[in-house]
Length: 299
Image (cartoon, rainbow, N blue to C red; front, side):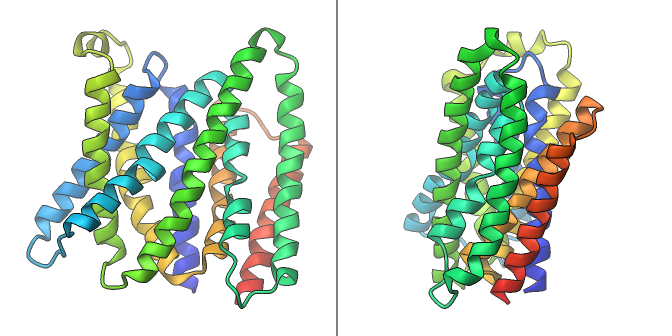
């Protein structure tokens, strides 16, 4: 259980990076950013498969098709929606909407042996933290009436991203538990290759041309951001999350996703050079308490 917990928290820390990357790469479209990140993820996954080809289990046609569908739910489609929502609504509100994923995963993935009385305290603490953060963030957004239309469009896109990844979390955990013969690394590599192919096709269809990309002043930052999120937030985080999904119940995994919200907000504050308000600090305390109480309830 400890290995699963540490893996889930580490995955959250790596995923949190993707919430500030769109702000670090101005001038890059959401499609280009999505393609850059996931082509990098796919390249690392393909290289890992080639290096371990003698011992690596290769997917059947059905498994490959499943990996492709999962890549759309949890990677390419999800991140495209998220990146575009951050462009319209900033970092905080999409972070908070994505932060409701633990609630939905906990509610939909509760194991039969776990009573609602055991799950409820952690659930209420998480809801309380989200309510505090939403109050603080929406009050800030209300001061920007000129951006109101774009703000709510960004919030809607973030809602779509939330639904996409919630479905991914539930289906991914169920698939891994039904196929114990497939390791966490192998499954991450299969999804990674499928994601890389899908992201490349997405860029060919909707991405910027090479001349436009070459004209950007921040090319070095863009390349480093795509590689960092591809390897860290993509490949490594997927392996860690698969380890957590194999070792923990779906509802506890859902609670651990709160760590992504915490790290995303932390990275955002560091990027802005700002300190959290008292409301945001209390929200973070509630998030941490919710994680700890949920861990205890699942033991």
